[in-house]
Length: 301
Image 1 (cartoon, rainbow, N blue to C red):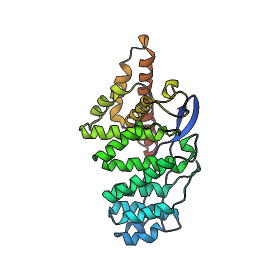
Image 2 (tube, helix red, strand yellow; image 1 turned 30 degrees about the vertical axis):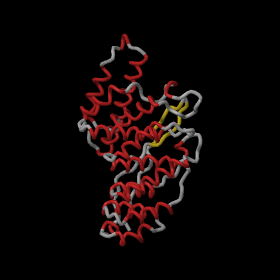
Image 3 (cartoon, helix red, strand yellow; image 1 turned 90 degrees about the vertical axis):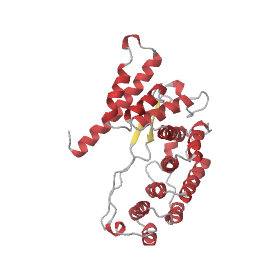
Image 4 (cartoon, rainbow, N blue to C red; image 1 turned 60 degrees about the horizontal axis):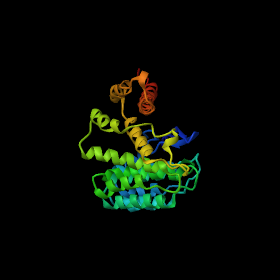
């Protein structure tokens, strides 16, 4: 059997109240993979059932991915049954690859049952919270599953239930330090809002988002609610969501980012203007670093 490679988690350095900690960018952590021929040939849900129950994690990942490609609603219950059987991987050095694949498959299948299943997954995790009460990313399962589930639910962004849910999660201040979920939810809310308003080009995106950006949303003392460790302010969450959207763009957005950076008069800069400028500089750096890595990988200058 031809096995395939599953990429590891991309880890980004995040400044948290003056301390450096690691956070995971999810669900954008995997390389494209090749499904084994014996699974790629399947055309029915029943053919994939045995592969999905395999003791080999690689085969389960491939089977879930293939079910997503087939898009048959009959696969929903089978995928949820497999999800329930997957072990909870709380350790930071582990990743629930099969669960992530199942979540993405449900998003691709679509339909009411898939949506209900994803909402059930999210609500279960959201209610129980991460096992680590200090940093969310110390619980790899929670830190992987929750944002991936929200991303999958973006399939139903045009439905009022999902659109409103994204915003309500952003607004819900929690006792546990789960700011990353709230920030992800607001990112999806903004993306859905832009889609509703027909803002689809790079220029439209940055012209809509840039006036709202006041800082990176991380690293400043004012980004955190006083007396509540690990709880970000709504302003910081908003900024973090905007940064997350903009830095995912490709090279075409760089001239617009440069324009925002150059708007500031360095000689007469205010603290607020400097925070905003630093945010755009950070976005530019993230995009350039990603393009550099892509170029090195493909060998294209």
